[in-house]
Length: 266
Image (cartoon, rainbow, N blue to C red; front, side, top):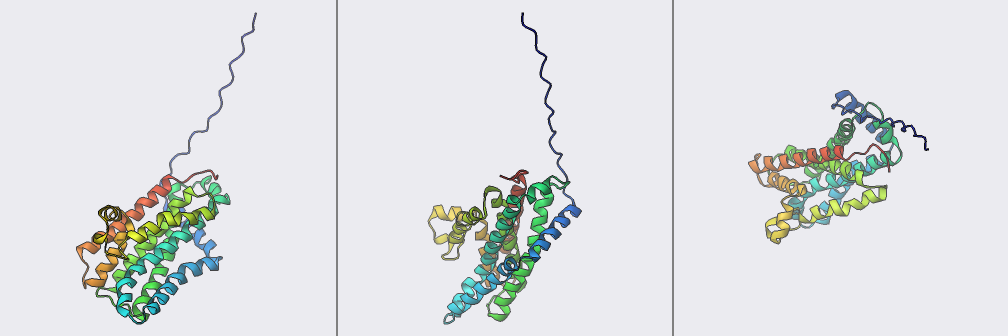
Protein backbone atom coordinates (compact mmCIF):
# COMPACT_ATOMS: atom_id res chain seq x y z
CA UNK A 1 0.00 0.00 0.00
CA UNK A 2 1.52 3.26 -1.09
CA UNK A 3 1.70 6.18 1.23
CA UNK A 4 0.32 9.36 -0.30
CA UNK A 5 2.97 12.00 -0.71
CA UNK A 6 2.43 15.50 0.51
CA UNK A 7 2.03 18.06 -2.23
CA UNK A 8 5.16 20.08 -2.96
CA UNK A 9 5.03 23.56 -1.54
CA UNK A 10 4.24 26.19 -4.10
CA UNK A 11 7.21 28.17 -5.25
CA UNK A 12 7.25 31.77 -4.32
CA UNK A 13 6.92 33.93 -7.37
CA UNK A 14 8.40 37.36 -7.57
CA UNK A 15 5.80 39.84 -8.69
CA UNK A 16 6.80 41.89 -11.69
CA UNK A 17 8.29 45.24 -10.88
CA UNK A 18 5.72 47.99 -11.12
CA UNK A 19 6.00 50.40 -13.95
CA UNK A 20 7.51 53.57 -12.59
CA UNK A 21 6.37 56.89 -13.97
CA UNK A 22 8.96 59.08 -15.59
CA UNK A 23 10.63 61.23 -12.93
CA UNK A 24 12.45 64.48 -13.62
CA UNK A 25 14.79 64.02 -10.66
CA UNK A 26 15.78 60.48 -11.66
CA UNK A 27 16.19 61.51 -15.29
CA UNK A 28 18.45 64.46 -14.47
CA UNK A 29 20.45 62.33 -12.03
CA UNK A 30 21.05 59.78 -14.80
CA UNK A 31 22.05 62.52 -17.24
CA UNK A 32 24.45 64.02 -14.70
CA UNK A 33 26.07 60.64 -14.10
CA UNK A 34 26.54 60.03 -17.84
CA UNK A 35 28.04 63.48 -18.38
CA UNK A 36 30.38 62.99 -15.42
CA UNK A 37 31.60 59.71 -16.88
CA UNK A 38 32.08 61.22 -20.33
CA UNK A 39 34.10 64.08 -18.85
CA UNK A 40 36.75 61.51 -17.89
CA UNK A 41 36.96 60.22 -21.47
CA UNK A 42 38.67 62.95 -23.54
CA UNK A 43 38.87 60.76 -26.64
CA UNK A 44 35.10 60.41 -26.78
CA UNK A 45 34.66 64.15 -26.26
CA UNK A 46 37.15 64.82 -29.06
CA UNK A 47 35.30 62.41 -31.36
CA UNK A 48 31.99 64.14 -30.67
CA UNK A 49 33.17 67.71 -30.98
CA UNK A 50 36.02 67.67 -33.47
CA UNK A 51 35.24 64.99 -36.06
CA UNK A 52 32.25 66.80 -37.68
CA UNK A 53 34.26 70.03 -37.78
CA UNK A 54 37.32 68.31 -39.26
CA UNK A 55 35.20 66.59 -41.91
CA UNK A 56 33.54 69.87 -42.92
CA UNK A 57 36.94 71.58 -43.03
CA UNK A 58 38.35 68.86 -45.31
CA UNK A 59 35.26 68.95 -47.50
CA UNK A 60 35.54 72.70 -47.98
CA UNK A 61 39.09 72.49 -49.29
CA UNK A 62 38.52 69.33 -51.30
CA UNK A 63 36.17 71.52 -53.36
CA UNK A 64 38.39 74.59 -53.10
CA UNK A 65 38.22 75.15 -56.85
CA UNK A 66 34.44 74.78 -56.90
CA UNK A 67 32.94 76.61 -53.92
CA UNK A 68 29.40 76.19 -55.26
CA UNK A 69 29.76 72.43 -54.82
CA UNK A 70 30.53 72.93 -51.16
CA UNK A 71 27.49 75.19 -50.86
CA UNK A 72 25.28 72.52 -52.47
CA UNK A 73 26.33 69.58 -50.30
CA UNK A 74 27.83 71.27 -47.24
CA UNK A 75 24.45 72.01 -45.67
CA UNK A 76 23.34 68.39 -46.09
CA UNK A 77 26.53 67.03 -44.57
CA UNK A 78 26.17 69.49 -41.71
CA UNK A 79 23.23 67.37 -40.62
CA UNK A 80 24.62 63.97 -41.58
CA UNK A 81 27.97 64.16 -39.75
CA UNK A 82 26.45 64.84 -36.28
CA UNK A 83 23.95 62.02 -36.80
CA UNK A 84 26.70 59.52 -37.59
CA UNK A 85 29.02 60.52 -34.73
CA UNK A 86 26.22 60.59 -32.14
CA UNK A 87 25.04 57.16 -33.34
CA UNK A 88 28.49 55.64 -32.89
CA UNK A 89 29.29 57.19 -29.53
CA UNK A 90 25.86 56.59 -28.01
CA UNK A 91 25.61 52.94 -29.09
CA UNK A 92 29.10 52.11 -27.81
CA UNK A 93 28.76 54.02 -24.53
CA UNK A 94 25.39 52.44 -23.74
CA UNK A 95 26.58 48.95 -24.62
CA UNK A 96 29.66 49.42 -22.41
CA UNK A 97 27.39 50.01 -19.42
CA UNK A 98 25.25 47.03 -20.38
CA UNK A 99 28.16 44.55 -20.65
CA UNK A 100 29.90 45.86 -17.52
CA UNK A 101 26.80 45.21 -15.41
CA UNK A 102 26.19 48.87 -14.63
CA UNK A 103 22.88 48.85 -16.44
CA UNK A 104 21.59 45.87 -14.48
CA UNK A 105 22.56 47.47 -11.17
CA UNK A 106 20.87 50.73 -12.14
CA UNK A 107 17.62 49.02 -13.10
CA UNK A 108 17.63 47.18 -9.75
CA UNK A 109 17.32 50.59 -8.10
CA UNK A 110 14.18 52.76 -8.10
CA UNK A 111 14.94 53.75 -11.68
CA UNK A 112 12.52 53.09 -14.52
CA UNK A 113 13.46 52.26 -18.08
CA UNK A 114 11.99 55.57 -19.20
CA UNK A 115 14.16 57.44 -16.68
CA UNK A 116 17.27 55.68 -17.96
CA UNK A 117 16.57 56.26 -21.65
CA UNK A 118 15.49 59.86 -21.06
CA UNK A 119 18.60 60.49 -18.95
CA UNK A 120 20.89 59.18 -21.67
CA UNK A 121 19.03 61.20 -24.28
CA UNK A 122 19.30 64.34 -22.14
CA UNK A 123 23.04 63.87 -21.56
CA UNK A 124 23.92 63.16 -25.16
CA UNK A 125 21.43 65.82 -26.28
CA UNK A 126 23.39 68.41 -24.30
CA UNK A 127 26.55 67.30 -26.07
CA UNK A 128 24.67 67.39 -29.38
CA UNK A 129 23.83 71.07 -28.83
CA UNK A 130 27.51 71.92 -28.41
CA UNK A 131 28.52 69.71 -31.33
CA UNK A 132 25.91 71.17 -33.68
CA UNK A 133 26.73 74.74 -32.67
CA UNK A 134 30.44 74.22 -33.34
CA UNK A 135 29.87 72.57 -36.73
CA UNK A 136 27.31 75.16 -37.86
CA UNK A 137 29.42 78.08 -36.73
CA UNK A 138 32.48 76.68 -38.49
CA UNK A 139 30.61 76.03 -41.74
CA UNK A 140 28.78 79.35 -41.94
CA UNK A 141 31.13 81.91 -40.41
CA UNK A 142 34.56 80.40 -41.07
CA UNK A 143 34.26 78.16 -44.13
CA UNK A 144 31.85 80.52 -45.90
CA UNK A 145 28.91 78.18 -46.44
CA UNK A 146 26.47 80.31 -48.44
CA UNK A 147 22.90 79.77 -47.25
CA UNK A 148 19.86 81.80 -48.20
CA UNK A 149 17.96 81.17 -44.99
CA UNK A 150 18.85 81.73 -41.35
CA UNK A 151 21.88 79.91 -39.93
CA UNK A 152 19.77 79.29 -36.82
CA UNK A 153 17.52 77.03 -38.87
CA UNK A 154 20.60 75.10 -39.98
CA UNK A 155 21.53 74.73 -36.33
CA UNK A 156 18.03 73.49 -35.50
CA UNK A 157 18.12 70.74 -38.14
CA UNK A 158 21.69 69.77 -37.20
CA UNK A 159 20.59 69.44 -33.58
CA UNK A 160 17.55 67.33 -34.51
CA UNK A 161 19.80 65.09 -36.60
CA UNK A 162 22.22 64.66 -33.71
CA UNK A 163 19.32 63.76 -31.41
CA UNK A 164 18.11 61.26 -34.00
CA UNK A 165 21.57 59.69 -34.06
CA UNK A 166 21.47 59.49 -30.25
CA UNK A 167 18.08 57.76 -30.34
CA UNK A 168 19.22 55.27 -32.99
CA UNK A 169 22.37 54.52 -30.99
CA UNK A 170 20.37 53.84 -27.83
CA UNK A 171 18.01 51.60 -29.77
CA UNK A 172 20.57 49.40 -31.56
CA UNK A 173 22.64 48.95 -28.40
CA UNK A 174 19.88 46.63 -27.16
CA UNK A 175 20.65 44.16 -29.96
CA UNK A 176 24.45 44.10 -29.77
CA UNK A 177 26.50 41.83 -27.52
CA UNK A 178 29.79 43.69 -27.90
CA UNK A 179 31.13 47.06 -28.95
CA UNK A 180 32.28 45.54 -32.22
CA UNK A 181 28.74 44.39 -32.96
CA UNK A 182 27.46 47.89 -32.17
CA UNK A 183 29.79 49.30 -34.82
CA UNK A 184 28.59 46.59 -37.23
CA UNK A 185 25.09 48.01 -37.03
CA UNK A 186 26.30 51.15 -38.78
CA UNK A 187 26.28 49.65 -42.31
CA UNK A 188 22.76 48.34 -41.69
CA UNK A 189 21.28 51.47 -40.09
CA UNK A 190 23.25 54.44 -41.43
CA UNK A 191 24.66 53.52 -44.85
CA UNK A 192 21.32 52.81 -46.60
CA UNK A 193 19.99 56.14 -45.37
CA UNK A 194 23.16 57.87 -46.54
CA UNK A 195 22.78 56.44 -50.05
CA UNK A 196 19.04 57.14 -50.34
CA UNK A 197 18.75 60.51 -48.57
CA UNK A 198 19.22 62.59 -51.73
CA UNK A 199 22.81 63.61 -51.03
CA UNK A 200 24.24 62.09 -54.21
CA UNK A 201 21.26 62.52 -56.51
CA UNK A 202 17.74 63.97 -56.13
CA UNK A 203 15.41 61.37 -54.70
CA UNK A 204 12.89 61.81 -57.53
CA UNK A 205 15.61 60.66 -59.97
CA UNK A 206 15.95 57.29 -58.24
CA UNK A 207 14.21 54.07 -59.19
CA UNK A 208 10.59 54.28 -57.94
CA UNK A 209 11.16 51.43 -55.49
CA UNK A 210 14.19 53.15 -53.96
CA UNK A 211 12.38 56.47 -53.87
CA UNK A 212 9.56 54.81 -51.93
CA UNK A 213 12.09 53.43 -49.45
CA UNK A 214 13.75 56.83 -49.08
CA UNK A 215 10.37 58.36 -48.24
CA UNK A 216 10.27 56.43 -44.96
CA UNK A 217 13.88 57.06 -43.89
CA UNK A 218 14.39 59.97 -41.47
CA UNK A 219 17.73 61.07 -42.93
CA UNK A 220 15.91 61.95 -46.18
CA UNK A 221 13.89 64.58 -44.33
CA UNK A 222 16.99 65.85 -42.55
CA UNK A 223 18.63 66.51 -45.92
CA UNK A 224 15.42 68.02 -47.31
CA UNK A 225 15.22 70.37 -44.32
CA UNK A 226 18.80 71.52 -44.84
CA UNK A 227 18.11 72.13 -48.53
CA UNK A 228 15.05 74.23 -47.64
CA UNK A 229 17.29 76.53 -45.57
CA UNK A 230 19.80 76.59 -48.42
CA UNK A 231 17.23 77.83 -50.95
CA UNK A 232 14.61 79.88 -49.10
CA UNK A 233 14.93 83.01 -47.01
CA UNK A 234 11.98 82.22 -44.73
CA UNK A 235 10.82 79.16 -42.86
CA UNK A 236 8.67 77.17 -45.28
CA UNK A 237 5.89 74.68 -44.66
CA UNK A 238 8.12 71.96 -46.10
CA UNK A 239 10.87 72.84 -43.62
CA UNK A 240 8.44 72.61 -40.70
CA UNK A 241 7.22 69.25 -41.98
CA UNK A 242 10.75 67.92 -42.34
CA UNK A 243 11.79 69.11 -38.87
CA UNK A 244 8.71 67.59 -37.26
CA UNK A 245 9.29 64.26 -39.00
CA UNK A 246 12.91 64.08 -37.82
CA UNK A 247 11.88 65.03 -34.27
CA UNK A 248 9.01 62.53 -34.34
CA UNK A 249 11.29 59.74 -35.54
CA UNK A 250 13.75 60.51 -32.72
CA UNK A 251 10.96 60.31 -30.11
CA UNK A 252 9.60 57.10 -31.63
CA UNK A 253 13.02 55.42 -31.62
CA UNK A 254 13.58 56.53 -28.00
CA UNK A 255 10.26 54.93 -27.03
CA UNK A 256 11.28 51.72 -28.82
CA UNK A 257 14.63 51.86 -27.02
CA UNK A 258 12.85 52.02 -23.65
CA UNK A 259 10.57 49.13 -24.65
CA UNK A 260 13.49 46.89 -25.69
CA UNK A 261 15.72 47.72 -22.72
CA UNK A 262 16.57 44.50 -20.88
CA UNK A 263 17.03 44.22 -17.15
CA UNK A 264 19.55 41.40 -17.41
CA UNK A 265 22.83 41.54 -19.22
CA UNK A 266 23.59 38.77 -21.71
